[in-house]
Image (cartoon, rainbow, N blue to C red; front, side):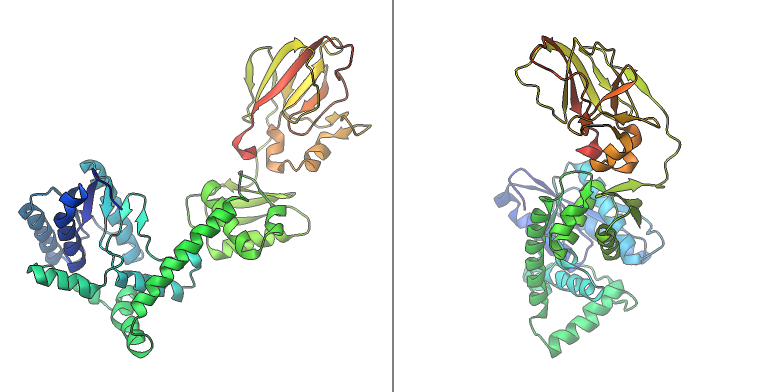
Length: 435
């Protein structure tokens, strides 16, 4: 969890676990080659008791000659435990930045892990939730997850160390307190004397399997567009995981619940038809055989026409985020059609070349089809998401669509044996939605 040269900021509430963590790091700092400092946040929930906890931690740090960052903050309304945790971690990150700490150590024990797993199980968590408290998350480390509270107190008593007691931990109005002092001891006494260790072992296995599923699912998630065919082709557990991996990469920075995942799967399983599912921060929109996340409202405003000329030797970036480049060159050795390159006989098609978005009535005399097709039908056959079609570039000359990048080109201007000079139009970059 640490390497020589690390600066470890220890979160110290003043309770037995966090005091033991600080003393342990102080004992080992020379052997580990680390610098140690302390941080304490007063949540202002217990009046004078909270102030005395802060004074205790500051005195402890001073006695050992280490820096201590201490502050106070009000806990916003809402779920008391969750909001206090959010405020506390935000403070720890700020304190670490101020002190230049590379690690933030918290004093979670195996008993805390068991409580967390049991609570999440009771609330219907899946594999990721049952992984419990992560030993490492970013620069946050939890070195005492393999220790139980009896070991912690034995360590402190052998040293003659003192600690503060937070009596709010015995408030049975709080969910975790009821598990800690009621349900978990009863289950341990009646069913499994090693229940805390068993639940901690379950968390270890769940994290390992969770990481494996993430790696397997990541193979199917390569762009901002998630294809329905991929979700159909894999087993339901892997499909759920693929949706979650995709969401973490391309969705909002908010939690995607199980009901959302199942709704997205149901949307993907429809035989035909577009649709959408509301999710945190926007909606998952299905268009044809693809799914994508859209923030905010799903309705688009009126289409704004745009048109620009391609200039030889210059990159042209379109309003939709595409980059095209026009150049003139001798006849190439190969002129095979490509989604990313269009090669045109410069003797039969002289230009100029324009790039624009689609217009009503646009069509393409598509190579290989023996006739013409509407741009709308072409987009549909190439699975271009409906929401992206109005900004998809079309290359035209003399009012005729010559090339639709990524979709097809016209039969006009094909390179033949007599060709000596060519125009080459290359697609340099696609927008992120197509990555």
